[in-house]
Each structure stands twice: as C-alpha cells, then as structure tokens.
Length: 269
Image 1 (tube, rainbow, N blue to C red):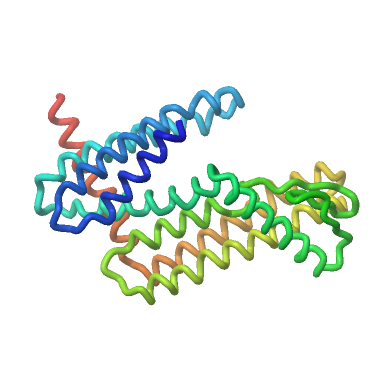
Image 2: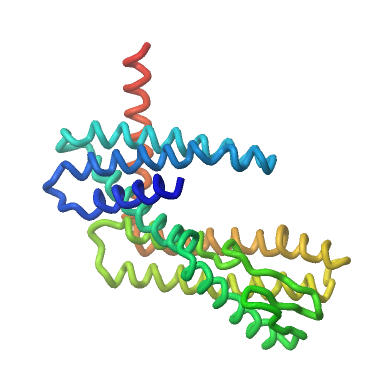
C-alpha cells in the first residue's frame, strides 16, 4: 500500500516539474493519479472496520475523482489549448502536499521528531499559562496529573501539507508572493495548533467543563474544532487574496472536469 502511494507521488512530482514543452508530463501525471486512485481504493476496509462509514465513502469518492483526473490528463497530452495546464498545477499541489505529509507519517525519525517537538513546545506553552504541567514521556505530558498523548494528528501536519501544496500550485507568481502566503499560513497554523493542544490538555487535566472526559470532548471536538475551521477559512481567504492564481486554478480544474464529464456521458448515451 505504501509503495503504491510513493509511486503515485513521485510520478505526480515528475509531471509537475518537467518543462512545459514536453507533453509527456501529462502521461506521468495521469499515471500518478491512477496510482493515487489505487491507493484510495485500498482504504475503505480500514474505515469500515472502525465503523467510520463516512470516511469509507469519502475515500471511494477520492478514488473515483483521481481516476477521472487521470483520464483527463491522458487525453490532454495531445491538446495544445483548452487550459489543461491547470491539471499540472493540481498535480504539483498533490505531490508537494502528499510528500510533506507522508514523509512525516511514514518515515520513523521524522514522525518521532515532529511529535516530540510538539510535545515539548506544548509543555512550554501550558507552563507559560501557569498551569501545573510535567513531561511524562517523549510524546506524553500531564496537566494536574492527567496524562495526554501527542500523536501525528496533534501536530497540524495535515494542514501544513495542505497549505504548502496549495501555495506551490500557483503558477507564474513571484517567490515573494509565495513566501508571503507561506508566512501567513504554515507558521500561523503551527502556533495555533500548539495553543489548541495546550488548551485541550489543560481543559482535560483541570476539568474545566465537567469531568475530565467531558472536558476533553467539549474542548477538542467542539471549541477547538470550531476555532480550527474558522482559522483555516481565514487563512485560505488570505492565501487566495495573495495568490489569486490558486482560485483560478481551482476554477479551471472544475470547469474542465464538468466539460469532460459531460462529453463522456454523451459518448455513452
């Protein structure tokens, strides 16, 4: 499963960085999306075992969408016009975001490093607020004696990878524009996540909203979830303001997908 994923990301990266005059980049990109579709199609069983049927459905949708994008890219190799370069930008976003996330998810020392760093920094933040906190293990700390464990999902690496991929997809913009977009997204997401982790751990350890378990649920799944969604929305808005090319790329991808889907439907009527 992991090999399929890495093959996909490498092929997408090749498509993204091959010079524009070589239409073979569409072949590499199409192959990358096929492997990504295979990867997604292998995921539903895991979610079904956890009775997470929503995510099981979502990965099936992702598999179908990836396969359709592959179809479009294979067809685009012989087309000089029509704005199909937006799928190269989309492939770059998927390659950069995917490589960042899965390096930290699959490579042991990187995984341990980011979890350990977030643990240490969350302890520092919690202590600065004056709450009783102590380190228990390299990936655990306790607030008021109540232990919390930091896992990869607590590091905000998903959002960091997402925004990095989106920023990298902007074509024809200056390095300074991309740097500005990076600085208002990735460092801000990381800092806000440290505050989120500290808040949740403190609410749990100090029983701010009832029992420790109730406090954890309310702080993690209601308060910080709402805050995270608001922050992601505002950061996305700022990125689109700085890099309008990103929204143009998204519009172009959706427009061509609608056209190609309609053409495919008419062909088989």
